[in-house]
Image (tube, rainbow, N blue to C red; front, side, top):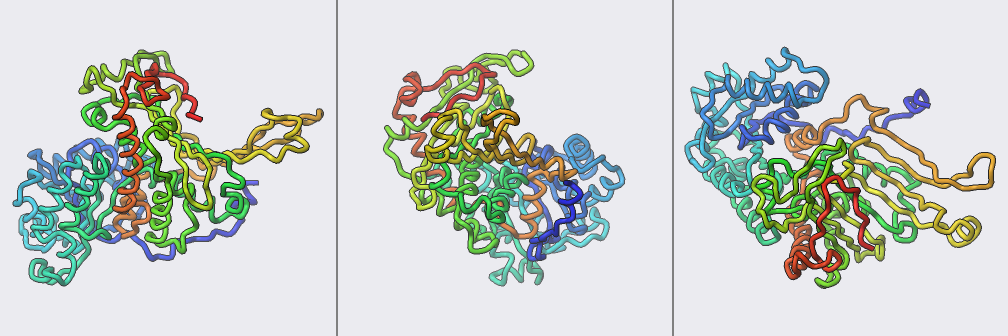
Length: 524
């Protein structure tokens, strides 16, 4: 079977329209956890796979007083630990690290940004000497691996130094850049605001220096191979797309559950909670890809336009209806899957002892559109549960009450299609079949595993960084997407705020569950 499948022709959709371009890649917050665990290991893996342009120059921008050599040594330890593309190669690291430099500066200090401008313009003799003759590319990508409270400050300082979108074109760009014109792109991480109002303010601040087309808002879930496969699975297979509607689908479950608690993230998490941390971005983005209409083409804006249409169609509900369709919970002391003791959320570092922040949320939404009207979509996520998984489950309707359904009733299982994002990445279809030797029906499954057909699944940040360098914004979130997603979460938060956290869970109160609990039932 495998030999036959390998003989099928390959339809390569890479037409060369998007390819990573040489640039000055500046990482703000370069000494932080995100840079060490995700960004630089992904850059190294891309370099090892010959995907990065070989004349890319990387600058780490942070406050710590480091030099190039000590910074490279720090990054090497991280890449040895977190890089994923095969065995770590000292030879490849030597070639890669020679393109990494460090700039020590406060995030709000204009001098650091002026130095960046001089580096790109080729005016800084000190950098030329450190770069050993390498010329700096005219393009620049600024990666903001810092807290959202710094986004506006950095964007403003970049613009003041002539490093914003305006500096990449004819409008005032020539004089400051010695005739060198290139693009300027800004990559920002989540959380993108705390609510709709703060997200709008943040967008306005970024727009002071950068055009919307040059802003790349990351949701790392969209970089996962199994998430990208949603569009291919739906629109490249006639066996699925004709039944992908309210006539054949009874409900949809989108779930992201973790076995770990919040770890050392208490300072951030206690002011955010599961709804802001996961529902507003990851789960809502998965819902958009699962339910969107076929885009007019595969260009980024066509796909993002269809996602916005999904968000616009989410039913607006009264607070009492939101409460009846949602649940929130918080873990208390319990045990993990190996029997180890797990402390309560309120006992975690930097968490208020009387905190009512939710670590579990489930929300049922519906879409007021032709394709999915009346189909409940359950979005659920939580920490410190017995199982760790991220998946989308499509529940198809049972056959009409005739023949098997009439006799079997509830024992006749629904057909389901499960798209497993992690772990055990793949797709499986559950169907009913005859039991050999007896007149009986039992559910069976067809399974497809990515691990069986691919030796290596690129890490999400690899794809997203390569796309940002290529100018492909398909997997990044547009400003209006963020605004519509916040509308959903703001309504949920407002409904919860109107209720006492000690009320019954079905009335908007907080469900206390022991760490290590089974994933709870969804609200009807």
